[in-house]
Image (cartoon, rainbow, N blue to C red):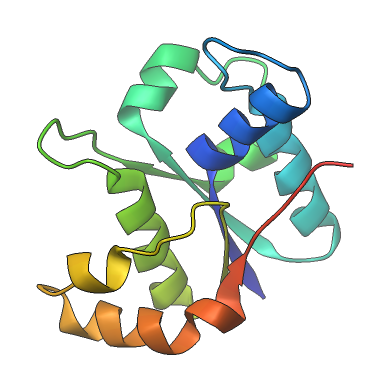
Length: 135
């Protein structure tokens, strides 16, 4: 089985909610926890990460497994939430769950130019979208 992780969302949620950061919230520890959780259960993990996030936070010290699972997406100034779009594209490609706490409320309209992805998203969002918390 496959699973897609939105690294930016998971890492920021961890930094804010677990580490109680108020600035520069992103923390790789949360992404590592999520990666480990799914990998230990036999899932193939696809960890969506933007070039910008990698350039800012690096990947030094990360597990080899997590680094191998990266799906690096280009950062585009004219495309807000490119990591969210790429998360959906990967989940549709692998027909699998995607882990992200964003609510994706406006994405059906935003996907108007991508009818196949929009149809898949509208049909499977409630089944495949996994919200998370750290315990």
